[in-house]
Length: 195
Ligand code: ADP
Image (tube, rainbow, N blue to C red):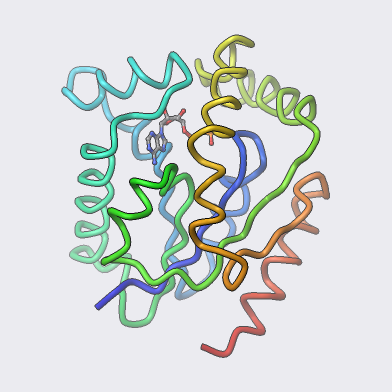
């Protein structure tokens, strides 16, 4: 059985995590943030080291360990009862992040919606990331060079994933709205969906 899935999609700083956390509190929605799972690894594990090496350069962690980590965490969530694939929608935040990951996930997820949090103004994204660096103590947000590299990685590797899923499922929202208005737009679509 494939997992019924909704993707939160957008550049770093577009607000995927903010929306994902809220959606994850709604009954029958399970939020999975790939970045949060990576950040929870300790640097004394092999993958924890790999994560620090890549994320500190603004690059993506290689696909195989990323997908393995995803699968492992989803299995654990199923086992401990926090995610029930029969009744729950999986809200993926930060994965898939390139075409290869999308293909690797294909046999496991049925993507119903891709919420694309669009932000045409790069300087807004940079400002948000710099504020988050202070608030959440994130090293990859603190350095302007790393921020630029992450935005470039997004444009080059992640954005093509939108075309992969296509206009049947992609729903574009203006991420420069306030978070509550972005949430309203997302909820309206989710609440009206009949399948
Ligand atoms: P943001 O979307 O704000 O850049 P994330 O918390 O989603 O932040 O990701 C932080 C870092 O974690 C990324 O820059 C990347 O190095 C790594 N990462 C997160 N998700 C993935 C993924 N699906 N594939 C590869 N690397 C990932």
